[in-house]
Image (cartoon, rainbow, N blue to C red; front, side, top):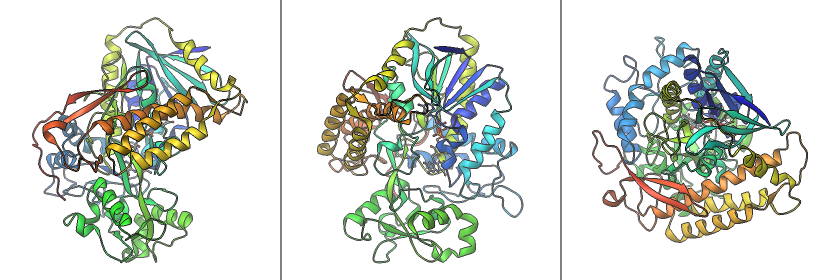
Length: 564
Ligand SMILES: Cc1cc2nc3c(=O)[nH]c(=O)nc-3n(C[C@H](O)[C@H](O)[C@H](O)COP(=O)(O)OP(=O)(O)OC[C@H]3O[C@@H](n4cnc5c(N)ncnc54)[C@H](O)[C@@H]3O)c2cc1C
């Protein structure tokens, strides 16, 4: 097998991975960035609404970084590590200035300063944007910057299988070139997992097909913990019926949710913030409206933009307009856009501290949606994820540099062959379970039983069924035996990861007997700070998830009722 050696290997060519790559490379270390798609096709490119930032001299005169941190802490239902939130807010303006300087074409105010809009749960408006294509603009800017480094090699369309380790030391990873199906061992002292989210676990998701939770699955199998995996975000406005995202920007710019009676129903659920209450609250309210018969036939509600006027919609929300027109046949300047909640984001992730370091293995780091720092706690506020990828991508890059300066090479190739042999079994096997059958069952279970409303019975059933699917997956096989771009094989690898992560999500959800943020338990409808003000830490055992806890870091804000 081909073997290449680098100081650092980065799994993921999205915003988090590329930001860290820039930092590690500018310190003079050699870097490999591995991505299963061309980097600019990473899910970061799909981000629409914007990136939150407090910018001195260019924010509401009453705003300051403390308000921003407070919004994050309250938005996350007090499960946020407050030191991490404070760092996120404090560095937000700086990071937007860097991207601005590198060429990201932010929308401007008439006087030339970067424009801003309200997003859900913000006390003052602070979301910066490039129309409704913010992620695309930031990702291209960052990629362009990274390609300027001679010491960054890109492995585009390489699928990462597993981590190579020697005892507790990370030793790189094994990937497979998707075109040739040849394995390659990328050896390194430091490894960053920046593999993005897991939306494909759910039948209804706004995420790309590539968001299959590979980073979490790979981490779990290597003995690395996930923190708070029970916290999954559902976005209020997935386009009906395709679940393509209609950005929160649509409500930020004045869009109103209405039921089949024409009522602005959010007035009943969030009398102050209305449609711009945090996502967990709006998604639950919408589900109640639909369940109680106030939705439209088929199970959706209306998002009304018509009062904004055609010119404004075309300038600020052209992507939402195009998506509604192309995928639902609706002209948003004249009719309401049909929407329903869909899975959107994973607040949980690889357990790292405020420097992006994990402590289960030496030399392993995580950033972006793959990581749980935790700045989002039990519920993420809109436009804080792009910010997290960049702020913590940079922090984590700095930690990797420090690590590389003080850690020598560890010689070994212990589990490299095992990784490859296991992978090839899917191709060699002539019969067994097909990934598609397992995946469809999994996505149904996750949506029905581990979705917006949860209870003991549903969650126990989910854990049982997912455990069965994992047993069946031992015999996974593929019908396509070709050795060029065999996408069926990669789908099987992804399914293996999804099953492992799903077990963690459902087990942790069953374990947490309270309601907090996006984790709503019908059988425990209240927040229980006495017993549950703590992070879940989940490890993968032989056939079950082992759960322990970590304290939440408080700096200034004491828990209070979360009212909007
Ligand atoms: C439709 C949509 C709109 C959004 N809008 C916003 C918004 O307006 N504002 C906001 O703050 N947030 C938004 N978010 C969330 C935000 O975009 C993401 O959380 C963030 O971009 C994730 O960045 P990342 O770098 O962590 O991962 P990603 O950008 O998802 O990148 C993951 C990378 O990992 C690679 N990878 C994964 N598995 C493997 C493997 N096995 N082998 C090799 N490579 C692998 C992928 O190829 C990819 O390069 C949105 C999300 C969605 C889905």
